[in-house]
Image (cartoon, rainbow, N blue to C red; front, side, top):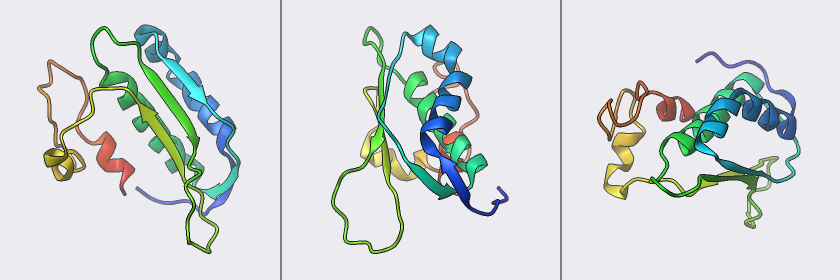
Length: 131
């Protein structure tokens, strides 16, 4: 994917926009989204939007039956030794997760852990998040 120059991005607004885009999926799953305050950051807004759509969308899609979906988006307050201008945020959910033995496979393009009839998708969403 071609990168655009970094520019100031209101991460809070971008998350809210993505949640609007995912409104039907959120309503269909009766998902509860917790969005904590997020700052302006320097980023490629289009790639960051795609990342958020993929991660939040997967959190909603790969849910456990009979368990209300909860997704929390928040800054990572873990102390770091990095001196550069880096911002880390977390997207946590209570979905089905995956076994660590599939870690390399799940992040490969066109790789799926589930049959197509179980979960829709192409198998490229998470791989795109790593590029």
